[in-house]
Each structure stands twice: as C-alpha cells, then as structure tokens.
Image (cartoon, rainbow, N blue to C red; front, top):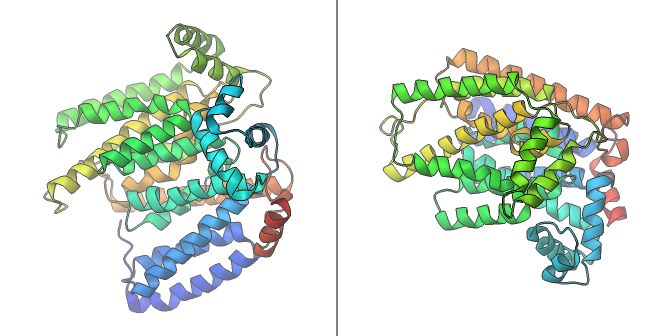
Length: 435
C-alpha cells in the first residue's frame, strides 16, 4: 500500500484538514482526534520538513491527552471502583505491606504503580485513572503503532481508536496495561533486555500474560527458519483453517470449561488462576456479544492466511533488520491465531472471552499493519476494498458506541453521558472538578 503524496498537491489540502481537525477537536474532542490523525498521516507521507515532524509529534500528544481524559472521565463502578478502593486503602502502606495485608491481592505491579501515583497526585482518584491511561496511550502510539509501521502509524492509531473495546482501559485496568506492555515487548524484540523487562512487567501487572508465553516459545523454536518454504506455508495454513473450524463447531460450554479449570486447579501454583477465571462463568454477569468483532477478524484472517514471506533481498534489508522484522511478523501471526481460537472456542461463556482475548479484541487495529506494509499476497484493489470496508465498519461501530453513551445504553459511561456536547473546555472543567 503506497500513500506517499505529492508535496505540491497535498500542502494546501492537508492544512485545510488540520484546520477542520482543530475546530472539531475544540468542539467534540473525541471525534476531532481522527481528523488530526488523518492530517498526521498525510503530513508524514508528503516529504515533511523538520517543522512538520514537530507538528506531528505535538498533535500525537494532543491525541494521547484527549483519549486519556476521555477514558479517565468514566463513571466509577464495579471493577474501577474496586481498583480505586484498593488504591486508597494502600495509601499509607508501602507496596509490599499492601500486598501482605490483602486476603486476595492483585499482582504486585498494581500496588507499585498505585504507590507512585498516590504521592504524585496527593491521593487523587481521577489522577490515578489519568496517569494509568496516559501510560497506555503513550505506549500505544509511540511504541506499538510506530513500531509496527513507520509510514502508517497514524492510520494504525485510527484503526485502534475507532474500536470501542479500546476504551475499557480504565475499567479492566490491570489486564489492559499488561496487554499493552506485552505488545511493546514483542515489537521491541531487537533489544533483548528491554524485551525481557517489558515481559516481566506485563506478567507482574496481570498473570493472564502467562498464556501468551506460548507465542514467545513458538518464535524461539522457529528462530532458525529464516524463510518458510511453500510446503510449510501450505501446511501451516491448513492447520489454521482446521483449528478455526474446530473453534466454531466445538465452542465450549460451562461444563467443559469447568472441567478444564478443575484440572488446572490441581497443578501446583496455578489453582489461584483457575479460581479467578471461574468467576467469569458466573451466569449473573451481564452477557457480552462478540459477534460484531467477527467482521474485522474475518478481514484479518484473510490477510494472515495470505501473509507473504519476507525476502531479504527484495526489501534490501541487512540480516539483523531482516530477522527483527521476521520475528515480529511471526510473533503477531502466532498471537493472532492463538487469540482467535480462544475467542471462537469460548465465545458463549459470558465475560471469559474478553479476559482470555483482550489483546485481540482491544488491539484489533494493530494487526492490520501487515496489509498496510504490503506483507500480504493479495491484489492491491482487493486489499484497498477490504481496508475501506473495514474503516466504514469501524466508523459506524464507534458512532454507535458514542450514541449509546449519549442515551445511557452502554455498560460503561463516559463524560457524564454527553460525548457529543462536551467541548475541550468541558473536558478540562470535568478533570479539575474530579481532581
């Protein structure tokens, strides 16, 4: 996919887009961010001057702050309320004492971050949510999106931010941060020390990240395979298709999963994990429908089954850069199909699919980098058609998300139910009043 623009043709139009974006951002910030990111996309791909790159970075900071404010101005209930109660309860204790004082403690990462945020904000609940969200959104844009695509990071950011599931980051806080850290670890695989540190941080924020270690193992086992032969490529795809069909046909019910949890509970040190997951089979929990996610996942499956193999000479890459890209592509490939199978297999089990596949459901847009970076063997017109349909679908989905908030028909409520009438001044006023 090639989105390089002529400087003479785009210089006039891109500043019109910037002007519209700023006007929309001032009046309806959560919508204005998309026009601003569109400007960054065009500006970055039209031979920008140094000042243009600084402008892009400034706009990205505006987007990060806007999304973080939006997510932090959530109505406090259930999971968020529990996190804030623990945050306040542990205010006078150090993280170790706080862990020891809890009968069923969270992972240690939560307490260490809470301890830091409490003293930075003088115990403000809103500041705690805001700092947490700022970490997630900063990593999302500057590490995940820019790490996946140097040219189209703004478009990947748009894809991610149009997904309503991304905005649960101040609801399922620990797991969302852990998921973000894990993705950063995969992308920063070149620096092994940073990669390992990020992996450990992700696990210490939520133990469910242990599930994803199988991806790291698969990449390690195939590290000596520089390219895939056509026979391996076909076998791999046949295996994935069979797994996909099995996931659809043999979706688990509560009794099957209960038996699995019983087996897991007998394994030393894993009993706590089975007990935790058992909670999400509670029939009293509100039912969540994941059918709407199957549309973008259908496009993704098409792209990943037609994933091309990197050829070092074709991309003019040195060996170390070639291996870095190849490891990342394989990691995302294995991760996608692991998550897809878990989603299909557990899709009838209330909140459990969200917990098991949060990375896929919240960061769906990130996986589309392979199509934008021309890493799929699909005709350009078909690829363009798929991406256009995907964008239209996500715009509609995000519009319905905001509409449902405005009519109080959403499980999570933001901006006191006024997403279309809350200006940037109102964002600031709400933030000050809650601080």
